[in-house]
Length: 574
Image: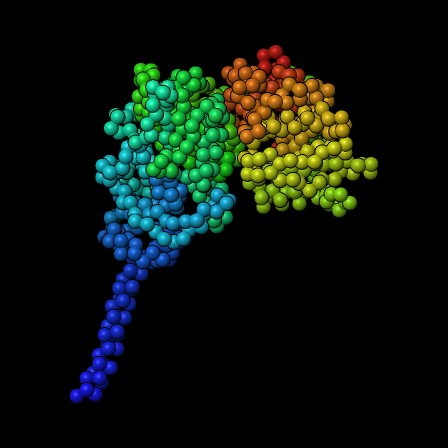
């Protein structure tokens, strides 16, 4: 009897395990059906999402339940960085058999932040947020609804059919609406009795990488966003030292606290400042190839002025940033109406032909450089310099071109700067000109002008004649010294006038005062022309003896000199 029971156990036990294995296999097969990617889908973000879903076994049944009787628009899945979710997959869906998108799953995914503003996904999905027209109106705070509506507007702009209810808050783009006290978000208490009346601005955002695809997942560190927020304050004419810039205590929002008296002196309406500042923040992000969609909410702590209550508004960045985008965007707060373009007027630019000839000589020299290994420096040709820029164009590289007794030109291997730092470079008695790139593709900066004036004022740099900014294969700018003594004299005037963080003129200095005085004639639709007009205004004001020249090479080299009229300061070109 004992032997019989043992034999039966030997038969039954494997059968039980076989059943368990079959059940697990069937169960696994059922889940795999729901997470397989259609063959025709080429979207890399969709592939990343499916990889993460397959690795997150706890989320597979959740995903299948939420998408039952639904079709998932895999080709339109998007991975982005959000102040609400961190790194998040946006997974649009619609009813099965329908072509209209009726909602999306917002699937946060775990990640490790890397040093180069990239992230490494760990493929651990967290519980998703389901967004439909109903949940958008009832469950999501109004201070975030624009961001969600904008996600669906992006899908609509691609030609997809989207439920209008999902785009209901797109009306907040570039506008503000008043909020009740109940609608305003929680905030740390700012005591107006001890600290004075404060304006508190909160910025929720989503961001995505807009540069050349490189196979990486991009996600900006919050500390970097804070630095951009401070830079945007400088560009909004408010020194960050006058404000508090911090992270929201329970979310990744950017919070800026400004004394109402300071804010009022710069902008009489907090709504105008909120929209203007949002644009400045987006411009800073664009320069780093990041597209930021922003919803800003403001509220006032303490009684200040009638109408200064609280409100919210949204602002979108450029979906397709262009190389011409620069730091001088249209000013929403100033009321300045941008003009079309800098007018052509050669008679008022006496140094124009001389400056063009000098730049042509520089470029001819640049294109004919030969590599050479010297005792102290390694010298390269221009193709090697361009290769360095192509591989590491997100930082600045500066190099000196030297002329020795043999009258040959040699380019020193470039020095490099950080992501936003100006690259340092060697120059001395043999330096003919300096060349460097601008990662944000902008014209010469105030810092470039200052450095050239410093070289002109140096008794050692007797041969230097200018500075070249490399934009791309076909576009170059140059600052040309027409009168060395005047350039040296201007150095004394602007020596302490340039901000080391922004590379622009200080807002509270004498150059800032000059630029404010002539702001009405120095604003153009092209941000690059506005930057050039500002620089030429300062050169004219101090009689600096320097010309700004641009060369664009298409079928032939086309040179343009920029300056301003001596008395009226009107920007002109030739």
